[in-house]
Image (cartoon, rainbow over all chains, first blue to last red; front, side, top):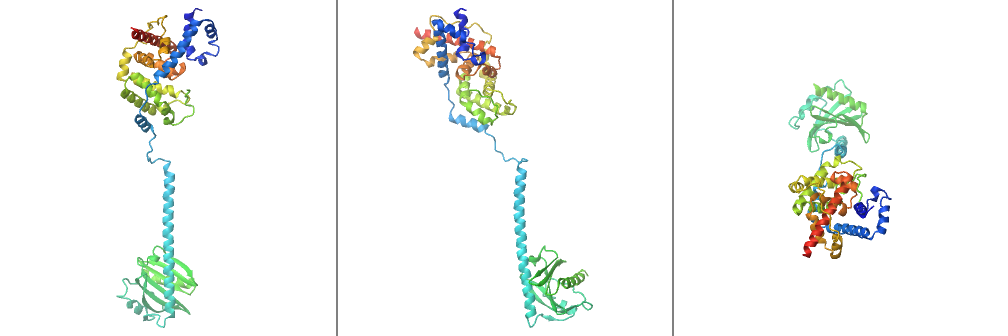
Length: 255
Length: 177
C-alpha cells in the first residue's frame, strides 16, 4: 500500500474512531507509521491541527443575561392548576376547617346551654325558697295567663289541669338572658315544677336544641320548642312526671 | 461525552449543560451574535415542545444539535448559506505537498488564522468539523445530528478537512507575499 492510501485512514485515526471500527483497525496503519517518517509527520500534523481547531473553535460565550432568559423560558411553569391531585388535599383541608368550626360551635352552644339550664335551676330553687314564690297566685289558668298580658311580647296557652295530678300554683315574670319570660309553678304531690316559657330567638342558649331532657344536680330538666316558644320544665320530680306535664302543655299549645 | 437520555431527567437538567456549546455552534453557523441568540432560543423552544416525544435511550445531545441545525437551515441566513453549498462537490483542491498548513500554524500558533479559515468554509463543512473536532462527537453521533449515514460523515469530514487545509495554505501564502 502506498502512502496516499494509508493517509486516507488518517481522519478516522486522528478522530480515534477505533471504538467504531474495532481495536485492531489501526494496527496495520500504526505499523506503517513506525516505518514511514513522512506519514508519521503528517499524522502528527493532523492530530495537532485537530487540537488547534478545537481550541480555536471554542470562541463564543453566551452572556449571563441570555442564559437567564433561556433558563426562564424552559423552567417548568408552576401554575396553580385545579388538578385532580389538589382535590383530596383541599377537600381534607376544608373538612378539617369545617370540623373545627362545627365542633367549636357545638361546644359553644353546649356551654351556653349548660349555663342557661344552671340559671333556670337557680331560679327554680330561688322561687321555692322565696316566701312569695309567685307574683300571681292562682290555680286558675284563666287568671294566671291574662296576668302576663302586657308583660310579655308573646302569649301562650295553658291546659285544663282539673283532671290532672298537676296543680297550678301561679306564675311570675322573670328574665332569662335579659329577655322577659314566664315562670309557672306547679305542684305534683310534694314536688314542685317550674315551667319557663320564653321566645325561642331570645333564648339563644336553647336555640336549635330541639327536644331534650336531662338530669342536672338531681333535678329533671325537659325542654322543647313549639310555635316559636321555648318551654323548659325544671323539677325534682321524676322524668316521667315531668314529661307528662310537658305533654299537657304541648297539647294546649296546639289548640 | 455520551449523552444518552436513558434516565429521563427534566428537560432543563438535560438541556442546559449544552447551552454554551450550542451557542458557540450557533455563532459559527450564523456569524452574528443576535442571530445566534435567536437560533438558540428557537432551538430550546422547539426542543421543549418536542421533549415529550423524545425517545428514551436516544442521544439527547445529537438531538439538540439536529434541531439547532435544522432551524438554522430553514432560517434566512441558513437558506443563503445552503444556496452557496454543493454537498456533492468533490473538487476540493489538494493541499500543496511542500507546505503543510499544520506545520506553519503550529509554528506560528495563529489561532486567528484557523478561525478565519473556519468562517470561510461552506456551512456543511464548518459544522461537521465543529461537531467532530470541537464537540468530539463520534461519527455515529454526528450522523444523528446531521441526519446522514456514518459513511457520509466520513467522506464529508474528509472533504471538509481538505477544504480547510487549502484555505489555510492560501492564507499563509497570502501572508508571505
